[in-house]
Length: 288
Image (cartoon, helix red, strand yellow):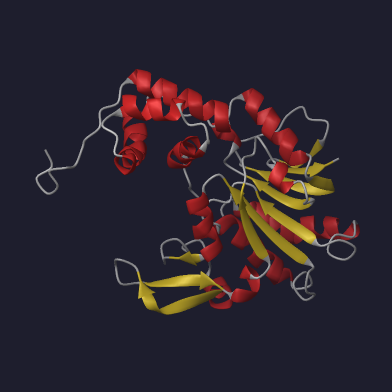
């Protein structure tokens, strides 16, 4: 019993529960959950059981089986998704974009005949997309004409999208930013403080004004069909899928990229044997 809160329930989960939960997550989102991580699954989902007033995981699985709207299934996937990101993570990719990639796109008329559209395909808390925005601002020519650049972030989780759109971070969360970038692109809050008493920081309004965020499942990219992407970040996502689902996701994502556009993946997510993507260097590809 929890002596602080006697109504607190410590839910018990079995390997059978984990297998059923993992299978449902795989079928609906393609995400692979390690069924041996029982504590991880139990801790991530216990809050859902408490919110629903359920007594155990059997009742929760019954709830999922009768989820005709798909809402609870979506919340299941959101609860189990891991959202890890940092500003300028895998910095060599941003360096390559600034050094070569933007020039290649410019030759194709991107940023002049067409707006430059940057998509963070699993944007998590937004650091990846805001890093791209800062890199573009540092190139200057892309940010001087209104409408020349559009930023798009998508994710499965509505809660995480709200965090990304708010663009507000703790000092720890912006550790990947240099002092120069903090001065140029962030506003320091005069009132908001974290638990340690340190201020929050927010991405400056000009960058926020060209970004939008929407909920999307990479197995069904219909909500994104109105967009044609020029730079796509698909990093540290494919590792959660089996090979068949990886191919399906890559096909969906590549179909939204303009010919000559650029795809960036995680360093541990090589893309092989695809006729629609040409390798520029490890983890950097161009749409054919």
